[in-house]
Image (tube, rainbow, N blue to C red; front, side):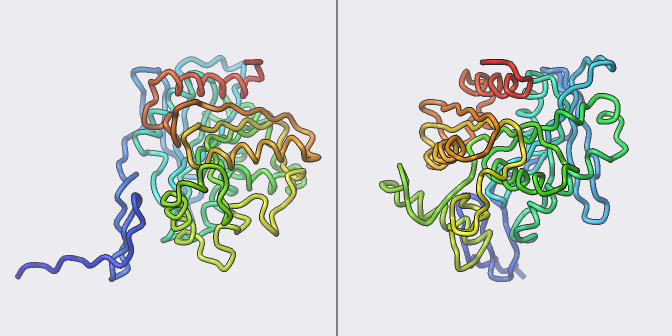
Length: 314
């Protein structure tokens, strides 16, 4: 007997479809690759468990050559994917992290936070906060031997940059148990109900992104939920960001471009006492560096992030 074809109840393109029986079929970000030695960069990686109870894991990276008497900055990386797709073992992210670690000369931990809708928000934020707290106390030789915990950075793209924003407030409220030196926000996933910039004319993309968020975090606040709109009612003041330095990168053709620029402008005008900088990549779209890591613009962006982490003027 021929099996019945599953019926689709919801299409959330280009990420996934929901079938009438409740099963989720992801259409992107499902590929995985193993850790190990990257022949191109010489960077080593391996997978580790952060919290056995939930299965929270991460992929940790280290440069080929390290002097044990000269510890390196520790970077916690949070991948993008609209909170719906991808992982630390997604090949594009794995390649990107290898190149970043090689360029910046850091120890990096790419966090495998759990995804919606199977794990509704704020699970991704809670997993990421657990990773920050645990990674500094975990018995992991690459961290114990090579990482300078006084130089802890958060870096994330898209949804991962959004996560970094929220973690910075929790760090400030943690009674200094978590100290973040700096944050690198790549094409941050911030949004809002009222269209701005290119969103005004691009109604189709505005509606599409609205739909992503409503699926991930259904609430009466919609796209003005403080999780996604850092300036909506109920959002904490940027003065409370718990980091010393922050770098934002935006892409000219990215529909999120204006949101990132406004974040930068608001931060400059706020009472936050840190140092912020912004970089815009012309003629490029959202997270282009993940899919074209060898293009000139991607290499320049990674170079600038490396300089930011190592506190060198561009």
